[in-house]
Amino acid sequence: MGIGSATRLAIGALLAVGCATAGVRPHAPYDPQRAYIYGRFTIEGQSMKFAIRCREGKSYDIEFSARPDVQMIQLAPSTCQLDRIVYGENQLRLMSPFRLLRNEILDPGGVYYVGDFAASGTFSATPVFFYTKVRQSWRMSAIRDNYAEATASLKRVFPAFASVQTENRMTH
Image: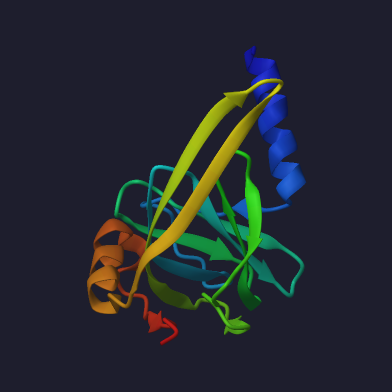
């Protein structure tokens, strides 16, 4: 597959999902007109993301990573909730069996901790005559409230947010 084909495929996949990944880079400035959510989102063995849907009409992705670093995404201020979990190589979508955000009001300038999440996944493909049998699975192995530790890490990694007040929105 050439670079042009790969680019078209990636753009097509992004348009099909209808989501934007709005990850904040470590040296990005703080924008008091935006809302932010952060936490740790780790996975072993598969790809996975949370799709957050907001009433302003957009959906935002939180990509899981093999690294246990604090991640932060930027959103438009709105009322938002976890809509779907998207996982695996084929981007399978599943309604969320739990609520990361429960119709949370995210105010302009708000920086909200939503939890530390650890997941694992498996993938196998077995040729069977004229087709391939594919098995994918994932499970959430831990959901933790590490607000103090994650916030300290956030303020170290994202210097523009060091003096910004944060709020724990971890649902218990």
